[in-house]
Image (cartoon, rainbow over all chains, first blue to last red; front, side, top):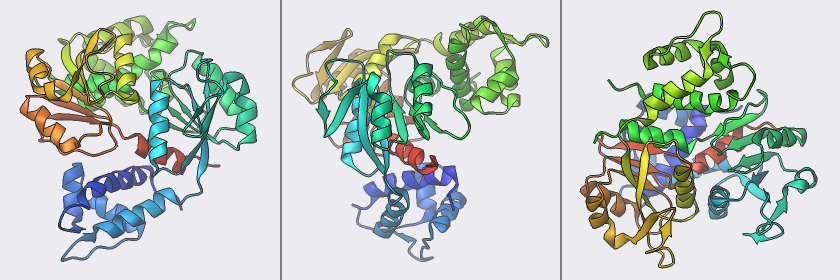
Length: 204
Length: 204
């Protein structure tokens, strides 16, 4: 059974927090403290951890090390999926560096770019191909996910090509919106929207 | 009066969509079409646009060009605020490039990094300083916002320093969580959580 989308998102956030917390003296944590630190309702925390199959002690709360382990098992020990990065500017390189750190259930199997400086080079053991090789490389490497970063080419054309290649999920990190059929999962982050919100809501 | 946080976020998303839509033949759009494309309820769209002070025609919907203009006026013609980028790896450079494109209510006034290769260099007219200069440069340039990207130094130490300098809003693009006092606005994006969700929810 699939966990709800918000639960997956929060489990990842709990782990992120707990990875800091594990170095403290006290190796237990209460759901209400996790909730307070993430500014969410502790009912959500308890329900998420119940769905994970973890139970805490009334007196001491949850074992921090065990919680990190259980969340990691749930989020990472899916079968690893193969992904490609399309567009290898600074954002593409930031994604690749993060992947090289580990902790994600993804293999980056290929990079695609238009720059002749990058094509045929190796980055952390991942090869960069020209856009013309997209279809062949995706099919030969069983790639099912695509991470789009800023590219000069027309985004809709690339999207259509990716869908024709059988891509099942897309992460859109460009500043343009894309429209996908409902069966394709879309993760999206628009840095520009975040910058606007940061400015709008910071009282100065 | 401040607009609600979700409204600001959606206004930015409407604009992002409309910027594609403006090239089409039909220069009008209905709230229900905006809602459908963003997979949200059209009641939200109508309320957001009402808060913006724009009204559409029953027969034709909203004028696309006018809508883009009104949203931009609302989101950008706040007084521009000065921001600094802390950490100048690939993610920091991606932020700077985006800012150079325009369309955000921010001046990037300084960059801080530990790498001697970057320090004292100029990027798009913005100077990179050593971390030791943080306090002086922030105070001299009236910088109120900070954008944190991956840095080798300890995040909590930098956060404390930024708060002591009077920073009012922080965007955290590192993969570590930070805890801020409630009066400091926090925007956060964790690429790793997004990658996990992409993998978990893409049916393959």
